[in-house]
Image 1 (cartoon, rainbow, N blue to C red):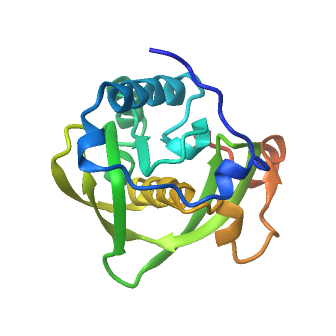
Image 2 (tube, rainbow, N blue to C red; image 1 turned 60 degrees about the horizontal axis):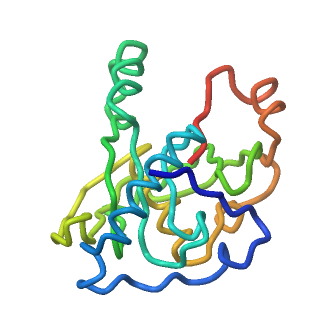
Length: 190
């Protein structure tokens, strides 16, 4: 496995619509290696999600999740918030549908826009349809943090950055100031 270079805001790959993976490509050694490398890259940069365009591959694929060890540590700290429980997944050719009208605004960051945070409104609950790494059709229902991460990563596949979803830039802040003025808790980059 390898740690891949993360594209930063300004690189054209982050603003392009990624192409869908064909059924025959999904199980190929190249795509399987890409998925493994994306999980390793996400872990290296302490992210909770990573889309293929962020590592210079313009295909409709993202990985996301919180490793089991981190989930156990989190569970010890906050047993009541099951929305934050997010197993590792690879999602290919995702399609997202809101599951209700409730919106939630919360903080987001991005590995391609390091050290910046902002509040982004998104549907609180969603249904995600796509394929797993074996090419099997899958459907997931998600809410809260998990839904936010999957929407953020799917946006990358359409050339959309979290700035584009913000209602205003009043909450846009550097990570240092976020910790100092906006929150006392640790924030994970998506």
